[in-house]
Image (tube, rainbow, N blue to C red):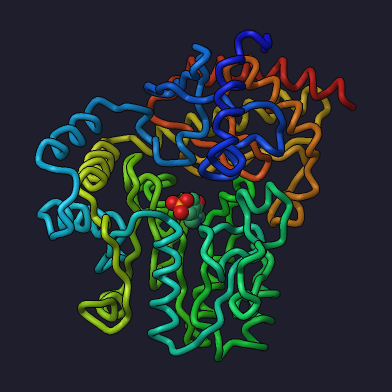
Length: 434
Ligand SMILES: *Cc1c(COP(=O)(O)O)cnc(C)c1O
């Protein structure tokens, strides 16, 4: 990248850092672990994203998951425009909120009632409060490397930006909160059972990303999710699937449909808001009816069920219902994951790639990678070099070795081929590191 061409983003980053901590409104956007200046985005369309220096990239971040139809889909824009004409927020019930709730219920049979919130963080936080309220227990169990948003009790052994920064948790989180969070290795049923044998009657819930997507992309090993279901049943704890990333991403019914395991509660976000701020939590009717005002467990939100976000969500879910959508996403992600692995292996680079539906991840690691400890053994220098060369060639990947990548329905085979051509060059450069 010539310095001249990157000058507008550089200038804006310097400016942003004067008024915004780190220059960004969410940590991984700052390119801290890959170095350099993040491109400032001007606009995006389909699978392409354009920065303020006029450079265009094929985008595999997709706003970290929501843009499953591609950016600025005409039908989603039209739905938002139509909604906007009638006003942007009422703080009162609207008909379309029921429509979205019904669409979610149709897709996820485990969800009998659902409450809209504005972010994934809020969804998981609220689901845990409900689990604690219902069971009368305080402890929760999560898995190392899984990310469930930034609420206090969940910033322990967390993935995503927390993993990228290499920090164990965060100052400002009371020890009293993290003491209630038990962390087990992902995909390790024996360790989870041990934790239950020690604290089982105090554990309100297991919260899990059924396919881990915040430490790369790590699918569950056979029997893991079913084993968690059985443990919860044995000890009277609730099972919460955090499908903020996987919901409407890997299959219409999320990971729970794919792996045929029924959680008690599910959290949704990202795709469900169609690129606007919306998320949700839902599950068994008897549990959800404990939420205020139906029940006694309090949770509220000024902008919850916002009409613009609901319109974008409804339109996105409707478009995803078309025949063959998820097959197409899986084929594209598969071609990319396999194409990358082939090219790396041809150069003798230790590399492993996984994909489920439209989500994928790769590690500079010979594999298998089934948990966070293994993910952390991947070659950070190789990733950094690979990332930089790909960006230089117009391929926009997540700026962290611990994030999943996403394909959209707007990624055509030609885009995947172009990406793999860029990867040839990037892997050549990685091979020279060795
Ligand atoms: C992104 C994500 C969250 C947090 O959602 P926000 O909208 O960023 O608060 C929670 N859980 C999972 C699995 C996620 O991928």
